[in-house]
Length: 123
Image (spheres, rainbow, N blue to C red):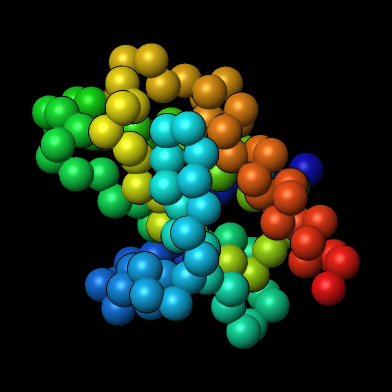
């Protein structure tokens, strides 16, 4: 049985890592999120995730809910999309934190990540 932990190695921690994603990465849009994705040179480690949730999204409870749900999606699907990517997820202003569920996150992220996986396999 595999461990489903989301270790420190799977997170973007420093400002330079976020800046590299913003400047060098490709921007992908879903209905409620903007994802900045940058391919890493080292093939080990899989997806590393960073979250940027502005105070414009609401009070701390709302911001933390958004971060929890997004982290949980990536934690549960970390072995489905084993790509060497750094991803920064930024929610759009139209996202209501109360309505964000794991099912909605799956509906938005899975098609995009599946398409990226098939593109990576083709090249």
